[in-house]
Length: 312
View (cartoon, rainbow, N blue to C red):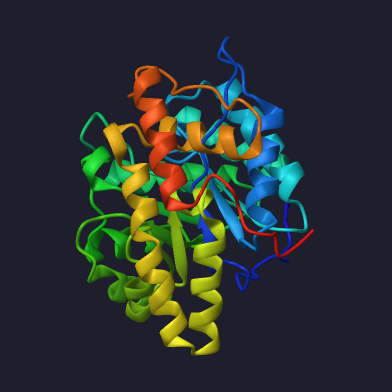
């Protein structure tokens, strides 16, 4: 059984700040391993607890299986013993998702996550079977669902979640990116480790019962989010509210031009000093003029130069 900083059945580390980082690529489409390691190192230096690897900002659903396996290997190696890598393996076929789960376990990732089946509208049996197959392939790793109905057309309702939990005992949590914010309390009441998928509302999510946040803006300004979470845990609500106010400008950055992955790569390329590449087609991308605008706004927002790192 693969582990990464937690023992079998120990979920205590799954809380806090988990950036949904972009996936750097070379011009030929191969994974930019040095760039990916650099992003993970940058974020870990500011105290993040883990990562949501190859999610939507990480362009996971359009990675080839070879690309996805490389990402899992790099994430597992880089985070080992230092942060928890939750590897997204969701794919259009169950067969591909199963292969991804096996690769994540073999690579030393701490957990796997998976969107429900998409494109073909699945019934309850198909959804449960999909998650059972992924869980069985994950070598005992915790499984996190990814509730993203805006893109998958499948929403986890309480009834659907209960049905999956009844047959997939390794389902331990989820990233809740659905618009119904109130469901965070439902998931917490079921004992699920619920990460909010809203980088704009990290503090309200914590008050609702979320155990942390997963989103792209966390990768651009990890220091703001880790300070917010530390303040929350310390009961310093004044400081937490100040950071809640600060993160709004970072979220606005990511949403520019509807090209979140490319925005993140553009900003991190400049801050870290490694070209992280462009969006993977057919994902939205930025023109050179738009990249210049993004960098100008990023400078105003204070994310082109990171503060002194809190850890080595």
